[in-house]
Length: 258
Image: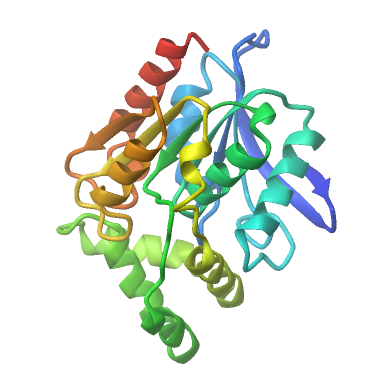
């Protein structure tokens, strides 16, 4: 399994790509709170055919070591270090939820690193209900079960919810709590309009965590951005409707010629 050292953390990632290497900009996927590269496997398989596609595990997630972070800025530094360590340039960054917060922040602070960004199930603010923090401290398993029910479309089979809750609990509770605190303090309401890169905003129409109004705000604030609303999907839209997400990203990149 490939790793790179970024600061004190050994960062794991997975990748796919054509042989010989493509001239197209590489695409880097950033997962959300408590997640890992696993949420992007459908996208790696599809989007990794014409170009290099990479999904990273943030510190303390998946197979990366480290203790996570409680500020988006810290994760931005890690992702920037990861990009540098791999010698990447002018990438397409795809971020889900907390990963979308990271992508927005990098687009504002380090736009030269990016060719475009794709924001999936995210917003300019990501407030977390206080009872979720209380629940994580009092009964972590029950809290994760509730979070899992929130992030999937109503009617998702119980077995799928159980599997996803178990997957999330592979991340330690302190790291999950840190992620949620990073989300809770994230706020780019005033700054986001300064993003000038090409942007695609994707939202599941039944998303209860970052509802459609969040995506519409991003689309309205970022000049020239494109909005894709995906039916029959909640917050985990890239898992619930992977083909629709893949087609949307492919069409977006084709229109850009990259």
